[in-house]
Amino acid sequence: MRGLIFAIGLMAAAPAAAQTTPLFSSDEPIRVTIRGPIAAIARNAEDSTAPRDGALSLTGTAETYPIRLSARGITRRKKEVCSFPPLRVDFAQKPAASSLFASQGRLKLVTHCQSQESHQQQLLLEYSAYRIFNLLSPASFRTRLATVDYQEPNGKAIATRWGFFIEDLDDVARRNGMTRAIVGERINSTQLELRQAARVALFEYMIGNLDWSMRAGPAGEACCHNSRLIGGKGSALFTSVPYDFDYSGLVDAPYAVPPEGFGIRSVRSRAYNGFCRLNAETVAAAAEFRAKRPAIEALYSQIPGMSDRTRAKARSYLAGFFNDIATDELVRTKVLKKCAA
Image (cartoon, rainbow, N blue to C red; front, side, top):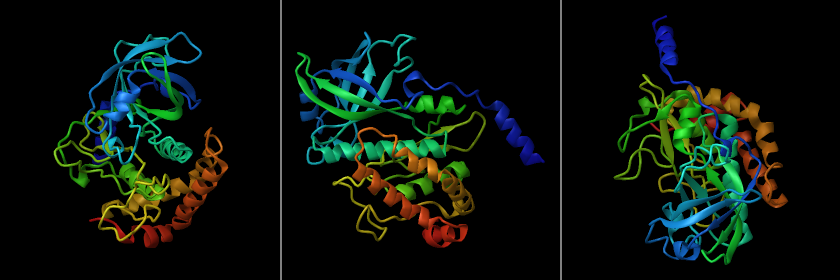
């Protein structure tokens, strides 16, 4: 009874959930033009993330906004990895309340890395990973697929490629009646909300990703690595929200390699990296994943630009995961046998 009263108290203390911002309220692809010193930003990405003046226009409308445009990321800013870096878009003025970009201040844009078609397919596969986790948890980053026309300041066309915008963490938190958590480099695993932590760990296993941590960030940076934390007012537990899936086996980027210590030679091989204390919740999460299988597989028919070959490869890779979790007993013996302490 005492635990029930405490839980009810936390629910009452939590802020009310907010509406999704217009940009992320639909999965319908959009088309935008980004004008700015694109070639210079790409050329200097490894050494500089200095913002440069530019403009963003929504195709088919009169909407054009001044922006500050900069390279972002770590691995994908390296010249030997990507010739075109991920971008950060800062709105220099507040978009109109009637705009698709209403309430946006700063956005991450995932880009195509290299010009070859294979990299377009890998971008769409990473986009699909975000969409999968949207089906599994509301505490997830929403995304908006876009055809992006890149232009120099004089209007010279640079490239037209697929890209996708990622929802801001504060908006994820507000949607879930929470706020961004302010923490140091590391938290204890006991500070994680168990149900979401189990979903995250099983999802990362599903897509074959080991490039993440729910409790620690890179040295000198705030927690966590390729995930962020949100929390409810009055609660001591944090909810983990994962992102950045280019190192996953699902995406299978040419530069992706598994980290040391897992005994695997390819990111296509799965290894579970969840905590043993999550095992009971992970078995329950696996049942949720099994129930979502039809929706997850159907998602691949909904992504424009994805080739039939890429769709088939993705579904085949995910089928291996669903074989691993076909029963509760298989989850325990196949997935959880190497859980982390």
